[in-house]
Length: 306
Picture 1: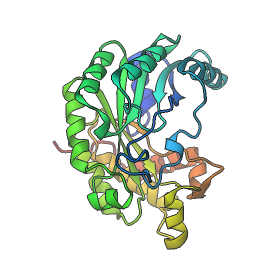
Picture 2: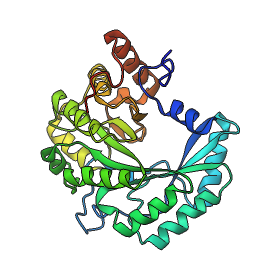
Picture 3: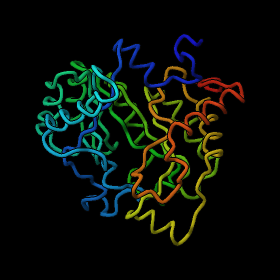
Picture 4: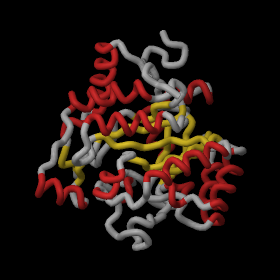
C-alpha cells in the first residue's frame, strides 16, 4: 500500500482530508447569488459556452446558514457526524467587494461542523485587496481557491468564450501560492476540437505550476447552454468512457505526487444531460480509470519533471 495514495494509484481527496483533519470531511455546496463578469456584460453576456446555471444547479436557496443547515442534513444521511467544507460553488465567488465576501465567508465559518472553505472563482476576479483578505482568511481556516482553467490552449479558450487569457491563470496561481493560499485548478477533457495530445499538454503544463489540487472533469453537454446548440449543429466528437479513462490515467502521470486529485470525473445535471450518457454512472467511470492505471502499472507523478 502506498504511504500517501493508500490502495489507489493517485492522491485522492479523501486521503488528503484524512491526513489534514483526521476524520471524514464532505463539501457542502453554497450559492450566494454572485454573478460572473463573463455573463453580466463586463466581458461577455454568453458565459463559458458549457456553463449551466453557473455550475450551481444543485445548490440550495436562502442565507449561508440556511444552506449549510440543509446540506448538513443531506450529508448526514450518508455520512453521520462528518464535518464539512463550505464550498462556494455557483458562478464567480470573489466577484464582489471585500466587505460582502467577508460577510458570507465569516458566516460560513461560524456554522458548527465547518472545517474550512473552498471558493470557486476566476483568475481575473482576484484583485489585490481580495488577495489580501484571502491570505487573512487562510490563516484562520483551511482555505482552497479553485480556479477554472479548463485548458491551456488559447484557441480552445476563445472557442469556448472563456474570456480569460491563459497567462492570467498561471500568474494568479503563482500569486496565490506566494501568499500561502492553497490552489486547485479545474480542467475539462473533451472540449470540442481538442486532441488527446492537447489534453495531456494541459496537465503536463499545469503540473509544472505545482497546484495543491486539480479537478479533472469530462465535458458535459447540457440542455439550454450555447454548447448544446453547437452540438446539435456540429455533432462534435464526445469522448467515450474508454477514451476518457485512458486520457485521465495518462494525465495523472504528469502531476506532482503531492498534488491532490480532488475530482477525476464530474456530475452533470442528469435531467438536462445530452451527452455523454455514460457519465451518469460515476462509480463505473472511476473504476474504469483505476483499472486502466493498474493495467498500465502506472502512478500519479511517475512522469512528472520539475
